[in-house]
Length: 154
Image (cartoon, rainbow, N blue to C red; front, top):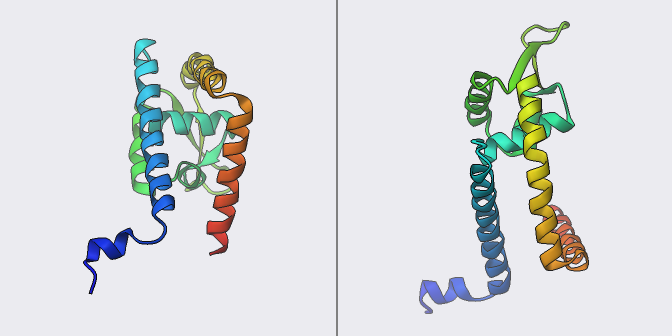
């Protein structure tokens, strides 16, 4: 009988390594982004940034939609929304048809901070594209979409 570690290491090792690299890259990107924003004296977490991004592109989203788009639980998103509201970045408004449902919008302060963040993000993305080239990034993106589609089928 083979040791458990040997059994675990057989088959799919390349895919496991690939997944680990993706997770490490995501963490490194988050840290890079946090350092970049901090240098610009912008004190917004990665999670806050995700919500601001969603609301910029989809004003009036429900908290449920935001939870789905940011891959957050309702509980963690609710806490995050409270923080964003306290900072004056978002406003929650009740729907006229059902006052229990709330729509979330960027406040004027939220729009101001997003407009300050956007060129920083675009500059960071442009630097990465310059270093790796658009062809490589397009190819990698295409391959990731193929992998995603295969995982969805399994």
